[in-house]
Amino acid sequence: MKNERTLVIIKPDGVQRSLIGEIMKRYERSGLKLVGVKMIVPTAEHVENHYTIDPEWRRVTGEKTIKNYKDKGLPPPSEDPLAITTIILANLKKYMTSGPVIAMVWQGVHAVKIVRKITGGTEPLTSDVGTIRGDLVLDSYQLSDTDGRAVRNLIHASGSVDEANKEIALWFAPSEIVNYRLVQEQILYDVNLDGILE
Image (cartoon, rainbow, N blue to C red; front, side):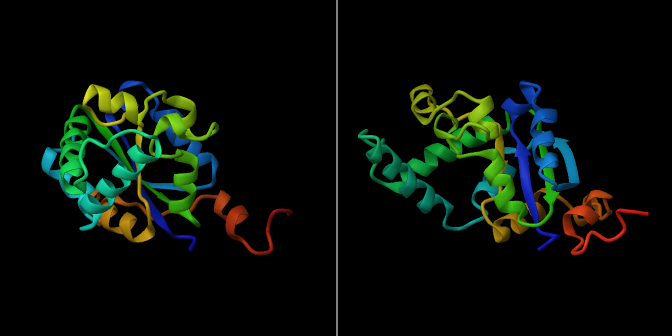
């Protein structure tokens, strides 16, 4: 469990708003270790491969979007989940290729869940105060739908360990991930805290 890894991408809006350091600091303060990082401008094909890495993404995302509209008392743009995700994917490709992104691999116990907790919910408007999205973004699904664009929520964070492993392999070569020790790992993971006192 101590070596669990997750993928985080600071999206173009996070880079353009000079929030790279603030975002990284929040994950680092939790005790997670940064083991891979790079800046790239992804291609549309790479973005599509990323979002469709789970073969069920199109259906699940479409169904979830329809449900969210109905829960808010709004008519969904379509009752067909695949028609909805066609629009979502086109908007995501435009958004994610609009400028550089920072791709990162974070490692530590419960890395996937810790990162998602710190990041906050997908929609900034309804994200909890104290999360990155809740504190640093004012966008909403309603505004992004009105504007015909993807919601600007600063970050992508893997949703499960399996998804993280697949996404990391898509964004990083094994040689781009560094194995090393941090002094703080002895405090975080040593059972007896041996060696603190001399």
